[in-house]
Image (cartoon, rainbow, N blue to C red):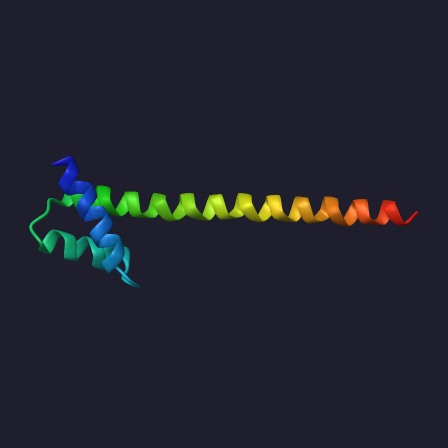
Length: 79
């Protein structure tokens, strides 16, 4: 059952496009998958998106900090 669940998560992620959460839930349930499983898949999808956004925010912050250090050190070398 776990293997099917993760195969479904990956497959649904590739096929969802710009659907709403309700539309994805409805399509999942229409395939005969339990509401609980569909809900878990949707929550995993949302968590994955949030995790990716957080990771990107950290990368952006690190890049800004690094560029600030380079900018700051270049001003001191000119003195």
